[in-house]
Image (cartoon, rainbow, N blue to C red; front, side, top):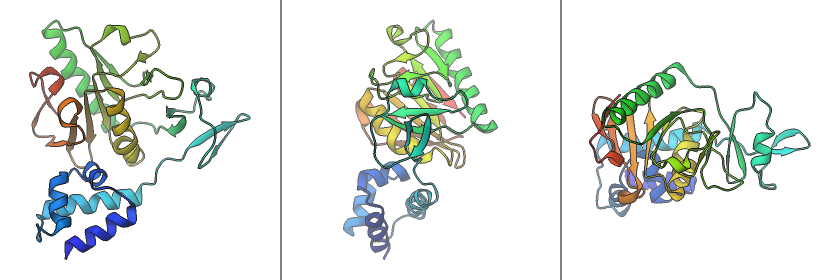
Length: 251
């Protein structure tokens, strides 16, 4: 029975039902029905999405913590928290994000990654300018001091900031209104796990995970839906909820 297989895999990964939902895009209610035995024959696409979540986790290990000590970088399971001083001391060719005192490597973007960012910039900017809006559009690289503290500095792939007081000369100081990350094998778990919770807790209103491998977008609107995502395909017109759906993005 698929229920038994799902329980075994979920237990082996030490995942909650909510985390499995986040990683697979399958609603929590659907997973609970399978686990309780209410649904004995899940839909094929549901099983494929759940199985893919486990495969992704097995194939893509979490990016290791990098600890800066005496000018060297090493992996470590625990150490002192790194701060913005450590972040600004990184070598020029070392691209990292700092999240809750831990460094995470950033890989160079692919051509498809850059093409998607260009499309987002064009469609968002055109919409805001046509309505003489005050929101600003920013592609990476631009530092975001997300929690306004000394332990986190991220560089989202794409963001929209509507509070001009957050826009500083060299960074965004506080949470953007909208963030989009382009998923890749090297960043998948960081974007779908650590950043998902971090963005929600920091006050980001809307977060899109754009998956070019599967031609889909996982959309979160935290003010109303919390951690319950909606899924959309690249072929759809995807509503931007911070603009009340007045802007619809086509990828």
